[in-house]
Length: 426
Image 1 (cartoon, rainbow, N blue to C red):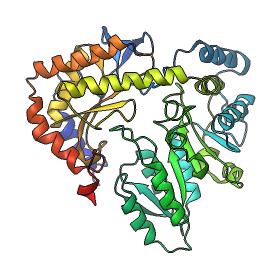
Image 2: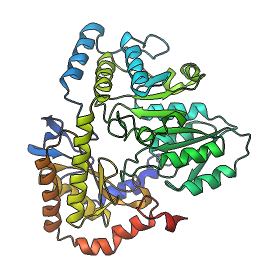
Image 3: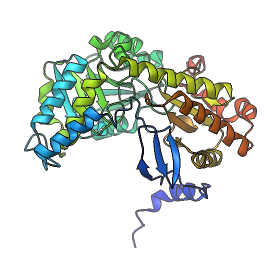
Image 4: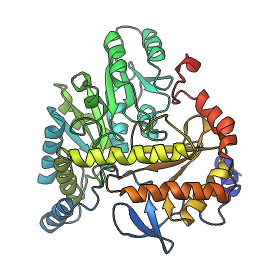
C-alpha cells in the first residue's frame, strides 16, 4: 500500500494542534459585515480593521462602485475566456490605458491577480540559460515565478547591496540577468534601497523588476511607488503591482518601456491560459487608479496614521519591525508562536483585527502581529488600536522589557531587515 500523500503535512497538523485557539482561530476569521474601510462585524463584535492592506481606503469609493455597477449592466458578470481569446473587453483596454497614464510608460499588461503577474513575468522573461537574482525575503509569488521558469536562481541577503554586487559578479558577463526586488516588503514593512540596487544592476548589465505591490498609492509624489520616491523610475525595466492593496479590488499588472514588451502576451502562460478579470473589476480598478493619481491629501493622511501608530506602539514598549514608520505596515514582534496566537485572539476579542504572521510565512522565524493602517482611519481609531495593544499586553502579563532584552529583539537584530543590521550581515 502506497504512503498517504498527506503524510508530508504532518508537521503542519502538529503545529496547528499546538496553537492555543480557544478564543478564535487566526486562520478562520470571517467578516460577517463590512461597515466601512476601517470597521467590520466579526463574530458579532464591532471591530476596528487594522490588517486589510486597504492602504488608500478605496474599497468604498462611490466613483469606483458606480463604475463597477455600470460595467455589470453593460457587459455582465464575467468574460468566460482568456485575454488572448474572447476575454478582452473594452474595459481591459481602458484599464491598461489608465496604467500607462498613471506610470507614464509605453506598455501595460493586466493579469487576473498580482500573484500571477509575478508568476508570469518572471517565468517568461528568464529562460534556461539566464539567471534570476532575488532578495531572500521575497514574496511567495516571486519564488514561485522562479520555480515555474527554467532559469538559474540565486538569492542575495535582504536589502544587502554588497551581497547583490558579489553574486552578480559571479555570473558570466554574457548571460541574461534579471534582478527582482520589492519596493516595500510586506511582513516588516521595510523599504528597499532601490536606487542603490539599480546602480549595481547597471554595473553588471542586469535587468530589474521592482514589485511595488505594497508601495503603490502612497510612495512617491503621485503614488507610483518607491522607485518614483527615489527618482529612479526611468532606470527600472519592469514594475509589477497589484490591484488588491491600494487600488481596492483584485488583479495584477506589469508596466514597462521595453520596445519588445508586447510579445509577452503571446508567450506568457499565466496570462494566456487564465480567464480575464470580470468587467466590474476592471472598471472599478481603472477609476481607482485615476483617483489615486491626484490623492495627495489622502497620501499625507495615511503617512500621518502610520507614524502615529508606530510611535504610539514604540513608546508603549513594543518591539517593532522598523525603527521608524517606513510604510503603513507596522509589525509588532512577539517572542514565540503561542504568545502571538494568544495576543492575536485577545486583541480580536478587544475589537481590533490585525494579521497574525508566523513561520514559515515570516523571515527568520519571526512571530508577528502585522498591522496595516488605512488612509480612512481616524486619529481616534489609531489611538484605540494602541490602547488595546497595551491592554492585551497587560491581560497576558507580557513583560515588554523582557521581550526587548531577549526573544524578538535578538531575532530582529540578527535579521537583515532590522535597522542597523547591515554590519551583522556583511
